[in-house]
Image 1 (spheres, rainbow, N blue to C red):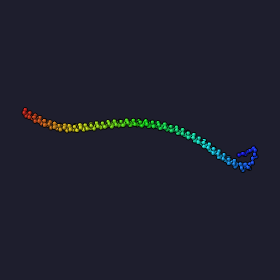
Image 2 (image 1 turned 90 degrees about the vertical axis):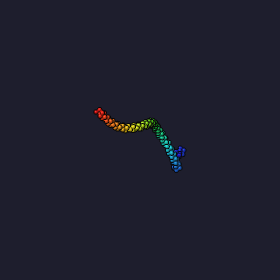
Image 3 (image 1 turned 180 degrees about the vertical axis):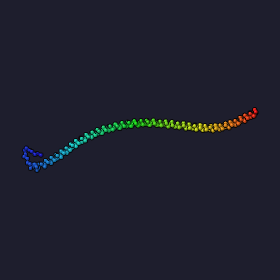
Image 4 (image 1 turned 45 degrees about the vertical axis):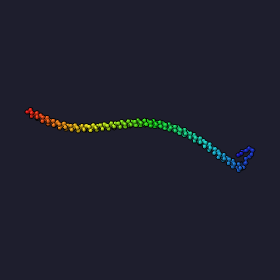
Length: 162
């Protein structure tokens, strides 16, 4: 596009008819290319901004995950300690239960033996009471017989001495 040239005079009509459409086409092409390049530059800027945002988001996510991991590890340690304490307590309770069961079984065995012995003593005492009742009845009968014999003997002695 040679609008002003020192050597040649400008013929405006010829320029408008022949050269201007070509120059306009070139300007339109330059405009489109400039818009494309401008879009590419803004896309690069947008991508750079998105990359910065992604980097910040990643750093934040890493910090959050590190914090969550620390919390989870602390909770896991606490849970393991509680589980260990519960296991020890369960073992102690199991030992106490076993000791109680064996002690209870021995006590029940001893009580059963004592109950059998008491029943035997009660049966023996009942038999002795029956024997004593019979002996008491025999003694009362013997005393009456003796009293009657003594009275009869005293009557004989009184009759002999009289």
